[in-house]
Image (cartoon, rainbow, N blue to C red):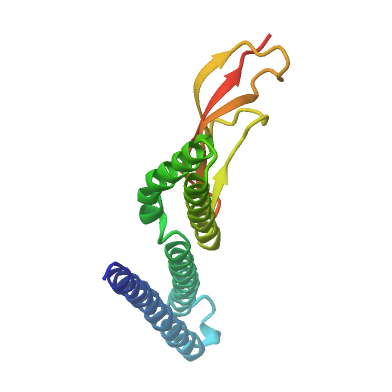
Length: 205
């Protein structure tokens, strides 16, 4: 139902954009007709009369209509380009809200993987650990197919656009202002940030 509602909304946006573009094209057509009428008036003027006021008026009207036609055509093209860009963005980021709601689920699965790995060795616990790990791997593969990629900036320079600094610590062996620990991974959908990575940053000198 959500996809159907989204498709109807996109269809409505497309229709409104197309209607606006059509309106500007009608303006351009009317302006072209005005240019033709003004040209006819200019041809009908008697050149023997020199700077005939009727000729001057026709020339001014032709220039005005020509400018109006060019502006209307340009605006119609801009509307079509904006509509195409909006549709592309809507398709590209349609999963943004849904993916954001799934991130806590993925966090829980990752904690389960860590807990399963820490359990004592045994057939039962080993099978459980393998099952949870497989579930986690399938989850990440599905995310990857949808364009959702993890942000794991360990060792990278701190980027306030993608990282959220939770603490700063002395780290003599790390580059100042670099990420020395990732408390929670971040995620991006087709390059757009879904959730910033929570990190610990090395203090500067």
